[in-house]
Image (cartoon, rainbow, N blue to C red; front, side, top):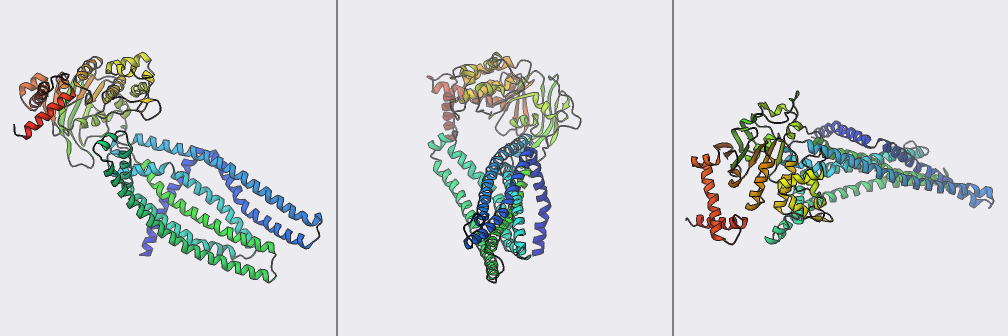
Length: 640
């Protein structure tokens, strides 16, 4: 069993050596010149302990000689020279330490930024699936939490190893003058501590990996308890205590497990330290016996005492650095697993040029798709044709598969079966970036960037630099201009209420700003997912008329629950259970008297009930609709 365990551990070594080599290559690529300077400083620092020992012996022997001699300059000159050399050595040590700290800080900053940039670049390349599966989120958390810091820790441990190796070699050279067996005793006395560190490093790493999900839960609870978005519900529903308890329960479990691991590690370290002291005591007894026998001077005793004592400490530090480097490579395994993740959504071997505009349209042909990790089919033999230059509305209940169409069209995913074609060409034949340049999307949960109002619009296409008039024209088209000019610095106002001198927007204003960002992209295909969910009915009517004007000539897809928007589309498609079940104009679908007609009557009933219940409110206001919805709910549950 022990041989099997040893074989299993040795099997890890090639992979760990690869991670070590890759990390050093990353470090060298980020700060090669600083690494050379740092290495020279460490080498000089490693020579200082042995030099200090020889000067100490000189001082002790010179002191003994000067005490037994006269007070002439010739007698005390060696003592003074030794003191001057020791002072010079101490000054040199301080100078080297200061330079080392500066180089280390500069190197750490450069490497940290380089590694963080590497992680950011990889995060932008991975497929969307990466963010939707638990195991990948665990890996991302591990890479983020250790990715920028662990290589720096490895570098520090590598530096300590290099410096201590030189220092230990110096101590071994000193001790060999008293016996060739002494360096071996010094080495053997430090091995138990090394084995303890290696053993508990592996256990700690395994515990850290196994508790990644729990730490992610604590991060989530911490975010809920401290975020602005959650603050209203925390207070209204009195949820703070519940989430605090959930947070504390997990933290208590993690704390208990870590303290138990630390206790076991401390006991083991004390045991091996006791064994090390026994080695030290035996060698000192031997050296004392040697001195009493007239072999050696007081300087030799001082030299031996310091050499063996420092040698033990340096060798333990050296072996601890080796163990820590091994431990670092275990953590770096997570970073490189993340960096080695290869996206599945890639450019074809021979990409087809992307058209500037659509001539014929978009065709979804026999599309079937399941989200990874889900047994429910989001789309099932789905077929849909959208003519170029038309505006189509796609309506349906939640979970019908409407938003999935956007993700497939943008190639965030590839379908399990079937194809999506633009002008008769499978979108998988286009380069990914070129395909996405054709599409502007207003997502259902659009980003609210903590940036200026102008930047929030320009993020739609960072490759161009428009004039202020062009930005304002886009904002006018989206209905966002009036809200922006009321801000303290207008278009240059920082938004978000997180940073100093920033302002926040209402939900509807943020949505208009997101629409402006979408329109600024000036893509031939425009997809809007619930574009008016944060707007009242009055704003909705104004928004839609603006949109039809600015989107003229584009192929537009509007996904919405609001039939007041859908009814004016050129074609309306009704989705249910991953398929198109009805298609036609508003009047054609009403005449069909199917799912669309029933849903239309329900929405119009809500509006008429709203007018009856709240005639003092603006017609079609969200408050009136909500009140009418409550009235209909009570009618339904009472069987009316």
